[in-house]
Length: 232
Ligand SMILES: NC(=O)c1ccc[n+]([C@@H]2O[C@H](COP(=O)([O-])OP(=O)(O)OC[C@H]3O[C@@H](n4cnc5c(N)ncnc54)[C@H](OP(=O)(O)O)[C@@H]3O)[C@@H](O)[C@H]2O)c1
Image: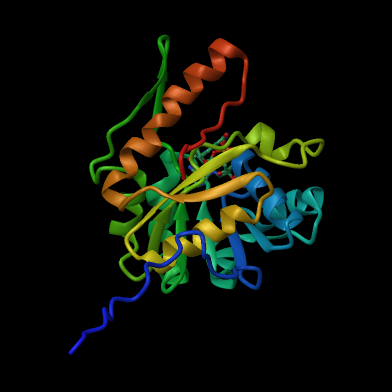
């Protein structure tokens, strides 16, 4: 008698879901990073709503971005979106998320916040009590699904309308494979980018901190450096 191996074939890690129908919100979307991400995602065909502490500011910035981007206050932005990118400064991170706990319940929240300090030696990584900004988000938002991504992008390149492609990988961290894959797929909508799984949220601190190294690179080489993960 022969037995057949009933193990399912391993899943292709590049077989990612279709996210084209999902609404993406960007908290703090009037800022450098938020504007850049909103522009790139909307240009790729995603429906995007940028959030602000002031709705009129968001509407004004959204009109400037074009490509159908809408503006709203952060609460409405969170409420109307399926995936919500957090792009506020580290200083306002905890307070912003605490105030939006209800609106963010059930949503996939993608944190791109890099807790950094600056002194005369340059940029350095801060050490959040929870381990990282992403883990702080997860602690503050028990009813949301939290992932982390988009830390290593240059807002300057994102906003440069003369560039058709952004040559970089995006490290994506999270607890649930399905959520991580949604964010990988979202990153992959931007020409030139790949979303690469890079571990659980307990490893977000290194990814957030690496931005201090990239800032050092950028200063020395007058660049807007990105990252590529090789051999995948
Ligand atoms: N810049 C980059 O290249 C880059 C790259 C990767 C990741 N990031 C991360 O993305 C986040 C945003 O960076 P950024 O350069 O875009 O910052 P930013 O331009 O200084 O701020 C983004 C927006 O956040 C809102 N904001 C400012 N202070 C706030 C506070 N205390 N509480 C709540 N909202 C506040 C403001 O919008 P309103 O006044 O309209 O509310 C502002 O336009 C940071 O955490 C950064 O680490 C930045």
